[in-house]
Length: 276
Image (tube, rainbow, N blue to C red; front, side, top):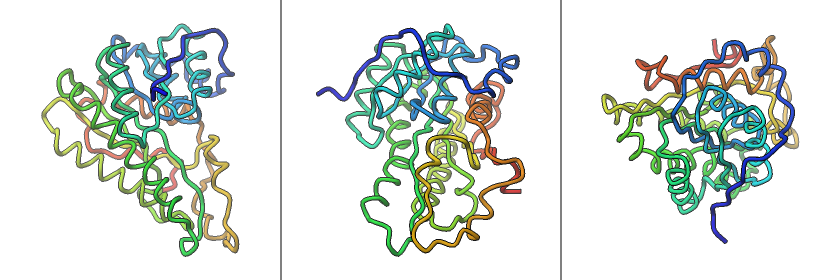
């Protein structure tokens, strides 16, 4: 089976988040004429980013490992009058990323914006954590962005563009029962800074958004392990509560746009004051 499966734009789509409507009046076409790759676009922050960039004029290449989920995202974008194509892509697979990126160039044109949002996690007692789960978290959260950036960089260098990688507040502070997640997000932060340094002055910017707790399906994977002390997790929330995907997407869109043209290697914490 080919690693690439396209979904034709259709009718329908799921409900918009309340925050999308509240922020709609601020949306301007900053990405008109640009192709934007968004990984993890099937749900959560990735879906919010795909919608936001499409609303601002981008032709969105929506990547996700779930064909059905990413099709729903694209259908919602289409119903709003935006342009998007869904691609079933496993970001941990070199061949899948290479082939899918080539398909994007053929279908939409060379990418000018790359947003690595796909991520997984979970709470584990480190002493009991299965090795295969450690490997999987690092593969999705760190190797995936490397593969996607590597595939896109020749196009970004030729045409100019921006990379925005989604890390976490756990890239900036320790969190109990999260060794793999913290390691992957901390690695992603420094990977992004390395890209920013390497391509400084070559028309490619790379920045990080570090969300705190966000109301997405990913939260369901963070059940406490046996014997965990809930008091160890008191610092994962602030009085502001969880953010919405739309709030995180707005910050990502800013860093991906020309409005942040003098910004590279930066970390934008969007965590309700968690890391103040």
